[in-house]
Length: 458
Image (cartoon, rainbow, N blue to C red; front, side):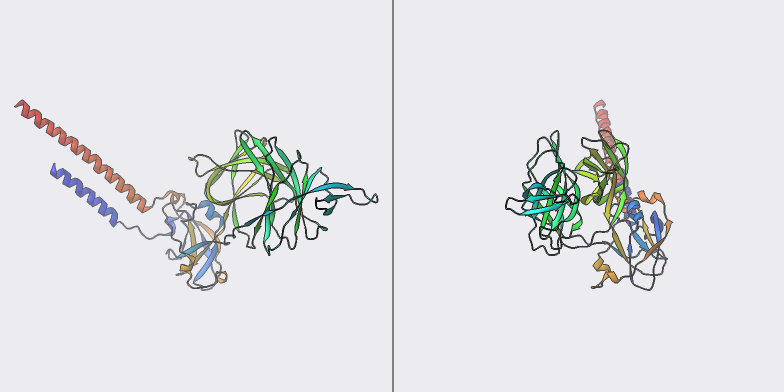
């Protein structure tokens, strides 16, 4: 029995030692599924490269940890990976005061004169609005913007009103002015609504300005409410301002949608993606559709609520963009509220911030960008570590992606990390020892039982 235990211990020790002594070979391009050859000019120690769209779609990991750069000798090169456009500063919000205006149509002095409406505030301020909208003018509101915003742009106007038990819908036009005389149209036919379905409420109380409204001296906004389903009083407003910053460069990744029960559609991407934004747009022109959106991180995980909003496809109106913060999304479920999508489903596109890779050009070219390895570990350096000093990265030359190549193929996408394999081996060894130990204890108990029976029989 003693020999049995000693043999078991020595077997486990030998297996662990063999596993620990096995050092994995250096990475090679064939460890990765796909790649693309890079063309460079000159003899710079560093080059930068905007990652191709295929990398985002075909990487084995959402965080792109399996991206590598190799030289012509097959050696892996040091690199850093950064978002192409720095993050925008946080927007600033401030309350605004709203003044309701009384509307009075003006009689034209001549038959060929344009139609006009006189809008009067309680303070006596009057605004003459030429060529009012053809739709029913339900109400109009004057909103002073104040001063001291400098170069900040107004990106969003949020309006507040009391809850509407029976629901409410309307469309609004927004105009801006510096003197209360000359008005510039800024937004047309923006939908507002306050709807209830069971115990849930759909509130669309925001007006977004495409790419930010650079007011350039404008001090007032005029909000014209059209075709309202019922009278409604705005109680307050909030403006959101954004400091000047470069617009983010993003990679669009369209989703494939299929119909689902309960007036819904389900959209999927080939692999989960950490999206920075989603855009949704109905297929039909001039459509306004309230929707409820859920998401899940993987096909085997439950649905989670994302948002309730309104999507629309209107002339001169930007597509609805839902800002995210890198949430990992594998699928979306979009359900129409009190409507049907019909045969044509809405368009859904996920957006990821574009990444720029900077690599140290050691050895000889041609260089190779490779990706797609389920066994890869993160290797990207900090940019300040890769490029010492205060060198301006904008001066770095660019590498160009030229010829796509197939390397190790799709089998590399599910490759296992050597550390994970050793961990699995250790797990099996431990279980083996436990099972063998249990068997040994049973054998020992059986031998003791036989000895006791033999002594009693004697």
